[in-house]
Amino acid sequence: MSKELIKEFISDFPIYQYAFLEPEEIEYQPKVRQVCKRTCKYYSNSWSCPPAVGKIEVLKEKCLKYTDVLLFSTFTEITDEKFDKVSIQKEHEKLTRIISNRMKDLGYLTYIISSGSCKICDKCTFPKDFCRHPYEMFPCIESHGITVADLLSDCGMDYYMGDKFQLLFSLVFFKDTGFDLTENKEED
Image 1 (tube, rainbow, N blue to C red):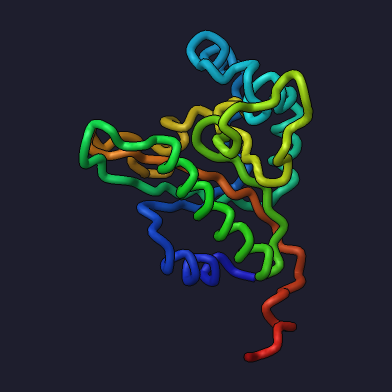
Image 2: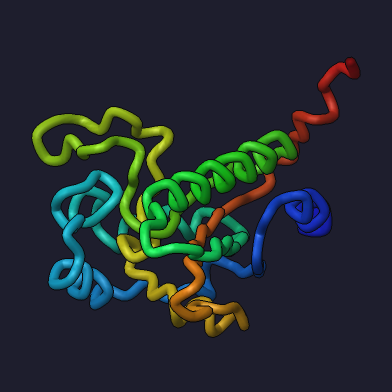
């Protein structure tokens, strides 16, 4: 399975920029967690954020089990002061899920991390109860110790486009299983 096939199908989606890289090229830094702890209201309040997601060393090991990473961004133009950040994030994550599912159909095993804390539920159950959507929730990128701005800079991608745009990012870690599910689908 080639990255050319992935490039071909993602061109059908409203992706702003994308890059392919290898998991080993990404820096997983514990100091990023300290920034989360000091500045983010979701720290210790969400299943998609630290400490609920686990230790960076374990997350790094999980990421390194994959052979490649698709990093992509979407953007939304902000037309008024009352734009809904949660809806924008939900749309980005819906797109991320569609892309991941398409990659799975092509025979890839995937693992996703995305921008910001999960917004599936109005109020997260952490730490009092189990996550209601453990298979739909994407951990946030920073929870893995990854500095988004540095990663984007390394890939030649935009991080900030001014106050009139909201950029969101996803990393889809993937590896080829050698089994293309689209080959076995019946024609309608």
